Image (cartoon, rainbow, N blue to C red):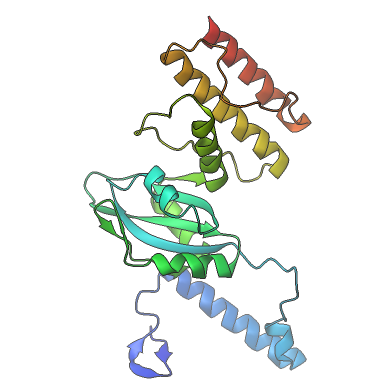
Length: 239
């Protein structure tokens, strides 16, 4: 099918549209036409955005090679208000795969887009605006792992407080499930970092009780099972 660009009639805006994308566009066009015929107001079809309304999340996507690790991308976008990096599981038969960068605001995404055509490892970033629908379609074809920037920041803080630093090849820890409440997430992240640092400290001969920074003494009610599992894990590590 064909969606004509009003400024360049030779340009088909739907040239790379998927079947699912086409179905969504046609459905929205039918719904908009029905709403306009019934109410006659464009504000029904395009309601005004009010202060405080959350329209996101906002996404960028780019092709990455196997040499571009989550740690390298997180470090490269640390100052650009990145919320979550979604990294694909690389297929050895395919040289490049699509990574998705998730932001909480359009302004953060626009700022991050200024890194277009810069290099990370051996890969030149070709950053493109995309949507949650594109991300959902990609997840149906490829396995993705989410990496939270907040988790990465905690790791960096833990490194600075430690006597030395983590091994350079250490990977970022995958984020907890997105449905968890922020307070619970913060506690879970600290537990993951603490457990990781305890393992590292033990390997470096600092003792099982070595800890780079204090963690919350009490877990949120929603994390009591996870708190018990963390305690058991720490006890097993000490043994």
